[in-house]
Length: 142
Image 1 (tube, rainbow, N blue to C red):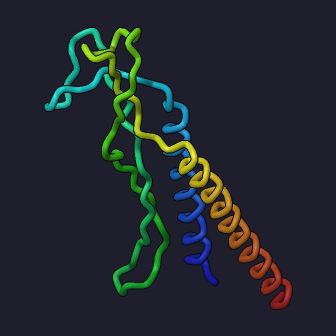
Image 2: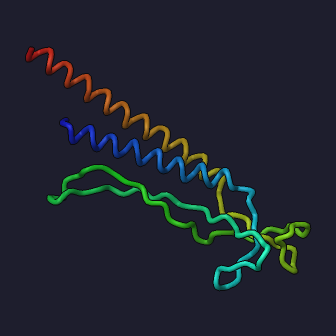
Image 3: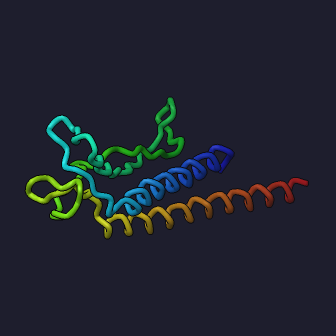
């Protein structure tokens, strides 16, 4: 492994922190409801815009020769963004008593967070191993 190996492991660790941040935002806004938007995506004045949950997708980054150079995460809006929920007492409720609740799967988010944590730990282990190998090589050559 070379400095490129450390860069790849660092990109993996960064990707996992981004995945975790996206998931944490979704979980933090799980109960944030808003008005059900019109077909053009707007809500009536004075009503709350519903939270737009995100989905993190991880892709590999290839170099000019097709060799791997790391990974990255891109956050995209979840579709559908919301699910109608019955809350007739909400100031954002429509005539049927429905509000827009974020389309967040708490079980899926929990699994995603645990996966991101384990992948982050694996990337850190790769960096530690690389550091130990370089130290051993320097001690041998010195």
